[in-house]
Image 1 (cartoon, rainbow, N blue to C red):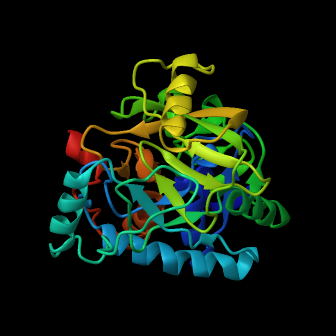
Image 2 (image 1 turned 30 degrees about the vertical axis):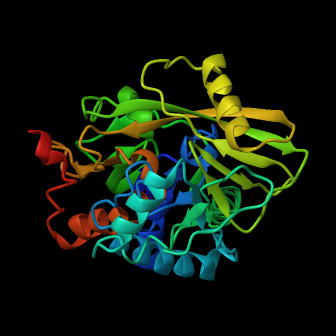
Length: 344
């Protein structure tokens, strides 16, 4: 029988950032990964403190940005990679009214550190009203992040490449197959709906498509362009454009209307020819109040859930991984805004 501190079920941002807390605190763990690409692994990796439709920010945005930067530096020490891409978002303005609203919001205390007052014009794309730069925005090298960390876990014999079998879990004795565990943290995204312990948590699937395109005229590569969706270069000479939001068409195949939406969105500001090379989609686990769900099972006191990260998976996953760790190990109460008990 193998004795470990934690089993982590899942392989997205919630799982990997929580695993980092365990590594940091010298806890033993096994992370169960089915090998299918999660919504996190096909995500854009956008790190953005501003809601770019309304030019507002969100709860604890600055704290989450700061914590992410520190955490990524800690991860890089053992992974050997560097994942923060300094490619700030440039939001294309639709008209003069958006420019005026941006400037007005940039004078407020909560947005002054995020909204750059100096507008810029970009080459190769249509931006007659210029663009606004989001200070402190960036991207995560999503492929490098997941590839390097899975490689690290595998070398340390911490990665279990199989689907977690709930029927093999003996909660009364804290045994799973040949593993004697202290705690289990379920970080399964929409897979939680198959979990008999947490299937009733109120996560709502939000399907997101993105395309990878070949552009006939390259655009500036040191930025992320945003109009309706995000456009930025990838490692293989293609460009990522996406992603959509859909709570209705939840089938597990490509939705042609979503692809059409993306083609129209890109054509709206990119006047040259482009060719679609890939189409991908994933299901984000979202919550009505737009806050993650973190907490303990009401009966099985060493089973925990970490879910509902939504479209801000990187920031939410990183920041609240420590909240969950401190709750389990130090009995520090969870913020009530994310606590599972708020749904009682």
